[in-house]
Length: 263
Image (cartoon, rainbow, N blue to C red):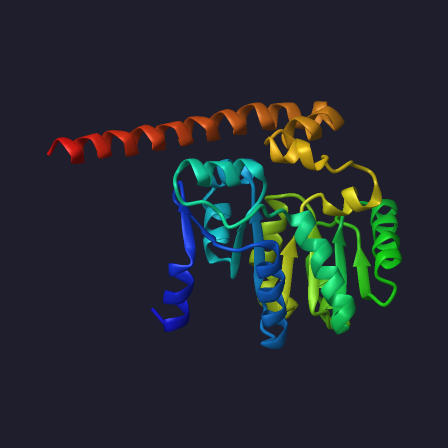
């Protein structure tokens, strides 16, 4: 293990077997800028409760996250779980927060940005919003998220030709991870960042939960109210599984602690 790898490992927190980087939103953006200064392809992943649960039953997802150059705990569920297990994340992180701060930094530094994902109308509205906030933002390309594996070679050539510093990917998991797994090196982009539904939020297609809702950990309820037919099964199953895994780990630690005390 290299000194850099040892340093990173010591900075990580282990949450139910997944090694998250111990970072704030500002830390993530700073590290991304470091990646741009050392331009080789890197992937940044944000993992929330649902993605964590899916990854436990998908070796493709799990391996992708473990191999990511930066693995960020996303959302209040992971945040509160880390606190309950005694190794808290240093702050609340979220792909949407990170994206907005990253675009502000991109405008300041003149970084080139490519947007990939969602539908054309939503993507156009999102980019207009970003450019209203950051008039000097250098957008070098855009493409909707509806493509097949057979389209990927042309898409990768198109993205690579624009020479972006940052590729923001707003397509769904597992598609996003499979796409990057197949094409990361060929893309040649220093920062490949999966932002989930952030484009839809920016475009106003979905509303972002108010801060008080996020703080009490009910952002998922707010999202569910907006898309009940699509999300009810996901949240019902993944939240229940995550809660059970968290409870089992807390009980395991309690039993181990009692056993250690009695001996």
